[in-house]
Length: 182
Image 1: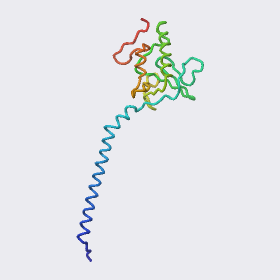
Image 2 (image 1 turned 180 degrees about the vertical axis):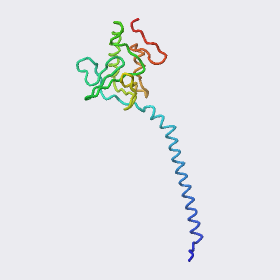
Image 3 (image 1 turned 90 degrees about the vertical axis):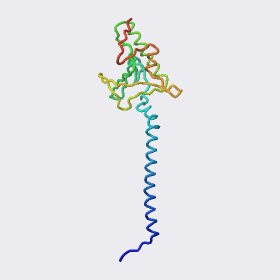
């Protein structure tokens, strides 16, 4: 026995299926537009701060009474002790004079750089890059850049501060080591 379908039901079914594909296509276009908005507008804003987190503690001066679990070792190195874990952080972007430097002038500048780093850290909120998986140098130190919000929507970079105040020298490819004894 053959089924009878009215022409009216057949036309509704056909138009319904076309509406379904138009609506699926519209949904895909809308999702594509949202994805494009995120990719070209919102993603760069989020990536500007990606990996920047606040250090876990306030920092004292290593080698002084009450230095605590976190302290400034010298003008470009931090130390954190938690339980049995010890972390050393080498701050990137500049090179400070060494505490065991070649002459008295370098050793004096190294102490000044250590105090300058400690003072900068104590001024307020600080954040560092590298997230939970920072790179390490050949001595096993975490490599991190530090900055703080400047209150104007930007950031004050520690490296710029240390270079501007003369507490450190530039570092990296193409720079010569600074002779702190001259």
